[in-house]
Structure formats: C-alpha cells, structure tokens
Length: 333
Ligand code: TRP
Picture 1 (cartoon, rainbow, N blue to C red):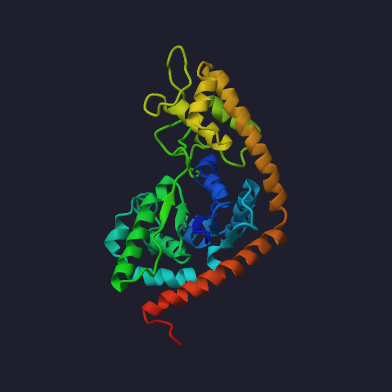
Picture 2 (cartoon, rainbow, N blue to C red; picture 1 turned 135 degrees about the vertical axis):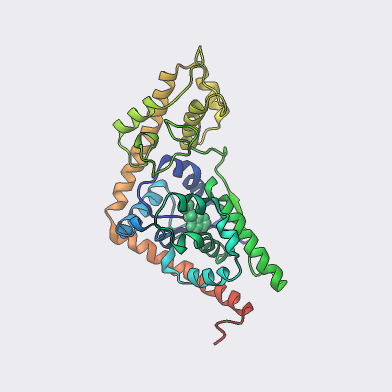
C-alpha cells in the first residue's frame, strides 16, 4: 500500500524551545518511519515578521541543523525550503480567491498579532491561506502541529471541502492534524497559565534547545511548584500545574508515559524531583547541542540537503498544481 503523506512546517525564527521539541518536532521524528513526510522550513511565513528578515539566511541554517540534530533523516523524508517551491505561491493565490475575509479576521492568532504589533501587514491576515496551500499542495493526510495551529488546520479543511464541493470532485485531500502524544502543552516556568514561548521577555520562563547547562539548572530550580504538604509528585493540571509541567517535560524528552513517572517519583521532595528534571534535560540537550554544532558548521552540506529536498518536493508540487489548475481553466497553455 502507498504510504500516506505527512506535511508540516516550522518557521526559521530565532531560538527554538523545549516546547517546540515536545509539541512538534518529536512527532516529526516518530512519523518519518511510517509516512511519506514533507518537512518544510516556512521562510515565506516568517516574512510577516519584519524583525526576522535580516537574519533569515542564518536562521534557515540554524533551524535545519536543529532538525537534523533531533534525528530527522533526509534520506527518509523530504526536507525543503518553502520559497524554493513556487507552486506554494500559485496555490496560495488560488485559495485566496475562495477564502472569505471574515474567516481570516476570526483567526485568534491574527487577532493576537494585530494587538501586539504595529506592523499589521496583509501577510498576517493571509498567513493561514499560505498554510493551507502548503498542506493541500501535497495531498496531505496528516499534519503534526502545536495547539496554536489547530484553528488554521480547521480552516484548511473548510477551504478544501468548499472547493471539492464546488467541483463535485475530490481535488484536495482533507487533512487531519496530529498533536503531541500525551497532549502536553509546555507552559512557562514562572507563569504556568501561559504557554512557553520563545518570544517571552522573561527568559527565565523558557528552556531553549540551545540553553547552556548553568542556565537550565537555574531556571528549573526557580520554576513554580505548589505548597502541598507533605509534597507529592503527581499529575494534576488544575491544582499542581507547575509539577505537571515538569512531568510533561520529562515525559516529552524521554518518551515515558506520565503514570510511570508518577510511580517513580511520587514521594520525592520537590527539590529532589527538580534535580531529576535538570539531569534529564542536561543529558538530552547536551547531546542534541553536540550534534547541532556538528551540522551547523557544514553550510555546504546543509545547502545540499535543501537542494535535494527542493528537487524531490518539486516533482510532487508541479504535478499536483497542474491537476488543480485544470479545474479552474487556468494555465492551459
Ligand atoms: N504556521 C506554522 C507555525 O508557525 C508553520 C507552518 C507554515 C505550518 N505552514 C504550515 C505548519 C503548514 C503546518 C502546516 O508553527
């Protein structure tokens, strides 16, 4: 049987966090063995954020090195740069003409962004349409994402169904999203009501994939717990959000179910438990960083991976866009 297609993308913007690994990249890793995976570096999306433009070239190599360091294998999946496949932009325009402005205004990410930015460009509004084009161009069945992207996948499904209905033909595959295993959303270390975010002003809230050992120790030592007495380690998002967050972190990097961690650590003091978290994070991040720096130095090699990915992705994209355009009577020459 033909393997189904998986598509996902990540923006080449600055420092990734442990949340990106646990929420998204860990799934990329798992899916590469079962599916035909397209993993894309979304440089076009990152243009919506003016401050990212200066460092884009470096950021692309940074993110690609992280992807490789995590263990994503370019022999098994197609890793490519979004802007290298111009068919994304062609399909984007077409989908724009079948998406309502009201649908885009309703996106919560758009509303958040315009509240927090002076640069309200049209790219921010149309951002989910480009995402839809990314996904629909490759007849995608599954899209591994973080929670914040669910609404965008729902919109993608809506647009795809709208066009399929219009032509009474399944031009597009209807994609499903995949969230991380134990549905863990990694929260800020000092403010457990808020998602851990690379753009947090307070860096003590965030564990970066490239953080050094001393920083990690300090950040975990200072992270919020609770005042249960005697202290107990178990998962309870409502009453013990800090401890639950730390459990999610260990579970995510070690791929161990939460209930097993609870059994192991139930009677540990918070201090002793935090030392375990620090040890596990250090083990994980030190070896990841070693591989990261190994790849990051080889820009020629990194370029070759992207060129190879472009070559492979282009074949799919070219064929699919011709089929799609046929339905709209465009590009018939
Ligand atoms: N918007 C996504 C993010 O910031 C990145 C992205 C772009 C994406 N195109 C996509 C994710 C298509 C999934 C599918 O996380």
